[in-house]
Length: 173
Image (cartoon, rainbow, N blue to C red; front, side, top):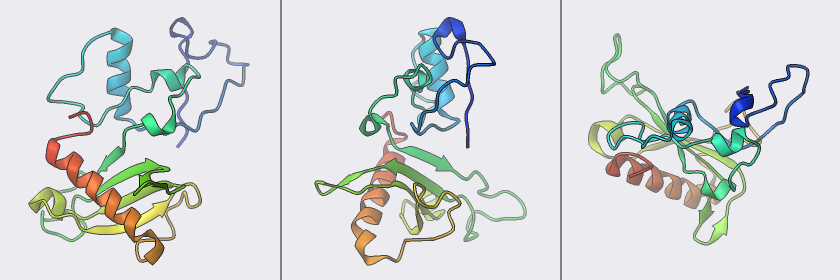
């Protein structure tokens, strides 16, 4: 999903609508705005909030950090318990982790990987991987790769990362 920003005084774009600007492929998420605004305002991040936020200010200024420094993106599905669903409904409250080119057992696995797990992580601490997509090749998330044997170590790694992040309360903890 495109994200468009300009803020001449802050070094984000030049403020000229006629200028085509620049394109960055650095991954961002809406929750990253919290950490970005905290950096702009020079205020500390709260210990008990915005736990999955990562400042994207360098990327907005045209100097994105190396992809390896990007903390995993955690996507939350906040439908847990919402009518007409019940918290133990099979499609309630799934989570996803997104990582680009992760290194698994010392080997880079090229791709923009997104792993979905079901509600059991939130309800009982058990990680059940359900879907895996490479967004670099499949932005529509049409081909679920979860059953591919050659990706089993990647699935295990991403599931472990998500479980660890969940158990410690966020990516910054």
